[in-house]
Length: 620
Image (cartoon, rainbow, N blue to C red):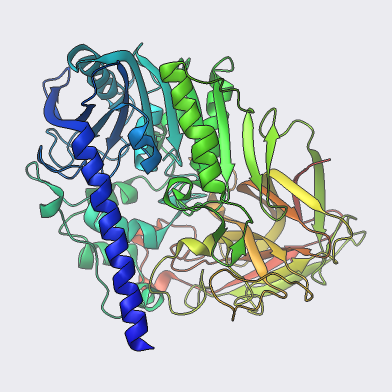
């Protein structure tokens, strides 16, 4: 058996390697690669790799990708395995351009994380919008055989650069696709959710990403990532309980941005200047915004970018696509399953063939008749694509479930005048965010089984009876809680969960040992740091033992709770070490000492005068 496994793995390795060699051979046979330094308006030069089709029988549009993650491989004789956002684009007929953004890898200049958009107040002369404009201007004037039209795409951080290109866009820029774009690093993307620091991601990412670069370097000479010998991140962060201690012990060699996080612990102008959607004006290019419903990094960014373009430029030709994907899963997988959940079709292949490639073909070449729905969204649970005339759908019906003291969710408000549940949360025994030894932050935690915490006394559980008909939830979810506590601050983690029936015939695509009966599938979870309950820019302490409303906004969902399933809500006050621990005291957490983390006694209220509920839109 061992020999068979080794032989099989070696065969797979040979197939993958051979496939990559075939792709690279095609690229070498059909493209001429040149490397250029393109000069920006302030004299800084940005390293740019350009792949030009050798067939000069027609003019080609330019497809631009700007990235902080390196345009490797470097050298005119070294080529990428494929071009564009996915391999199928390689043969579609484009001039493919990749650029190291300012201050990264082989480009000159100084790098700045989510560089602020220039405006009259900050007096900046350049930003990512001007760098994009200058790059496009050079390309259309200097790259032979282009047709004068440019498209742009990017996933995650490159999605931010794609959004920035929409501000004062170059006339040649005709089609842009921000995908899982970094949009707001304080409210909902990557490093903060609801004002709370996403500790594990921020620490590990910035350990290498924010390392200083004294001179241009290739990826081969790049900084190395953080290595934890014990592999147990839960214990590692408990053993290093303060943010200042992490900085002193592990991040002094690097990470300027960690200092910026500490200096700007509320949403001040540092953050608003970096929230690119707040600076959008009239958007002229056609826009395809793409996001994953189970994206651990930037679920918020995709929906927020689309909504802000619609709000600020209502006449723009912008559309939204959201599928059952992890971060970048629409181009990095076939999309027929994720984690333990099956979707029944290759959603990613459908997207690439029917949406993204036709989007660029139409707007950059005039090919086809691309007329997508305003929003094309995959309904998990029902496992079907649904097309909407707007997002969130206009015909949504608001539905509210009230939480009760006996752990129920009901559509009837409680008639009692004094009804609550009392419980404790201890930041020194935080609730883990995923099951087992946490050796990594898995992408699957976004829809993973939640039974592993459902019996903890510091996790409140509320559920409906078995549904008598399908319930399709679309759009944002709002938890409206009435609380009190002995401390002056707390985090509030709210999870929307689909509970499978004990008669479920579902099976996990990963193995045949996972028990899917009574599976508690996470549909959406989010955290709010309580002191930001009224304003992200002006934190406010809780008054001990005083009833206080706390409203937690969860990113948009698109999910059908099937007949026979139950809808569950879990509420907890830690999500560790995904989210840094709240000391339960109103204070600057970056200055907190180990002794500052204290137990909190909580009350959650259910009375008619002080209800707690969950609300969302339901399809009629």
